[in-house]
Amino acid sequence: MEARMATVRRVTKETEISLTLNLDGSGNCSIDTGIGFLDHMLSGFARHGLFDLDLVCKGDLEVDAHHSVEDCGIVLGEAIRQAVGEKKAIKRYGSSILPMDEALLLCAVDLSGRPYLSFDVKYTVPLLGTLQTEMIHDFFYAVSYAGAMNLHMRQLAGENNHHIAEGSFKALGKALDMATMYEERLQGAVWSTKGVL
Image: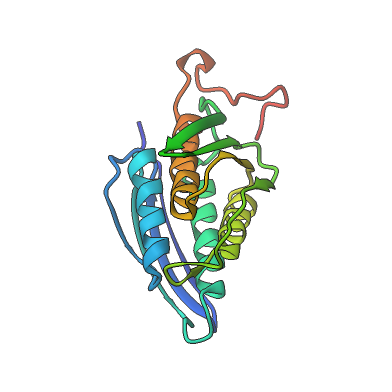
């Protein structure tokens, strides 16, 4: 089977990003966004989704993390969209209820071609490391829209903000891994009554 990989570059006056994603990897990653906490989150996403992910971002962190975080989400979403291609014989839907100590996160995705984010996660601190917690929503928003997917994220329990954030990223990895798996019974067809996604 053909490797499902994509390389995306994005260069603006605010960021310069290069990302390579292999959906059929083994969880190897090399990530340098300049934001330590985001690197940690994306490592968890890749490892638990079994995606190979290489990402380098040079952004205007002297301003704040906003442009870097949002643009990394855009580039990751675009890479996911490109790597799944025509979506023939993939399961399309994926979900995960992921526990991380006291935190419990639910993530569900539909690689429908229609972007939508529903996000119900609460943070009680403004920063995790140097990452503004409000930017976590914007990251997932960017992934969902650039990736043309429905993405639902729910916090079912949790008090520790680090656990809540990390559970979210790992849950996305698990859900996306499920959604991109092949379903042999489809015999190469797209899982839609329309015939296309």
